[in-house]
Image (cartoon, rainbow, N blue to C red; front, side):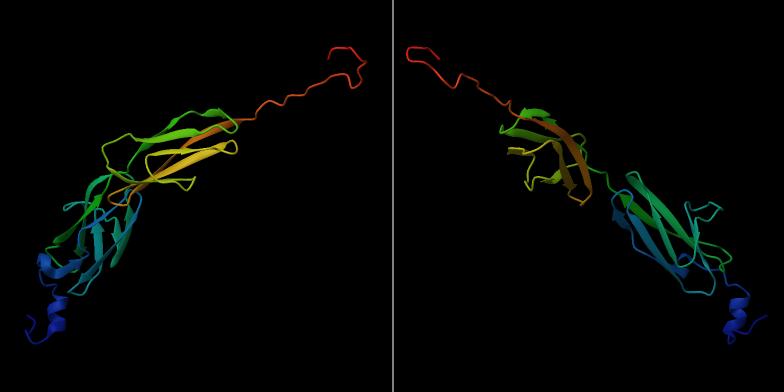
Length: 193
């Protein structure tokens, strides 16, 4: 049996570890499709593996750093384990993915040149929108301006968690008709034009 004074022998015999044998990143929050970068530090020799569940057998990553992203909102858990621990405890990290705000742009899509246009960004879900930023350099849920040309008008909305989403409306500016007046250039006295 190994001597208590010989730490190398103790590592060789793979001491059963407890959940404190590994330190991982704190719980984190982000927006959908944001890349989470998680880190783990093992207090005992051996490699670190990451799992999607506390009991799953297939690792989703290996090494002290794990990068991953989730496209949908929700709460996810990732578990880190140190392979040299015979009891193989796993330490959990909770990843909270916020919901994206969603809006639609309402207003007229066609107008004559020189006319004013009102547009309104209307939320489509329960996520509270904090800011509205328009491609016309205006702010707020409702804007009024005179478009100079046909094109798309965009609004970018941000939630309290700084998750952003963009919506757009295509507008058509119809040119004013051109009038041409024709008349005789010479008249005799007494003629009516």
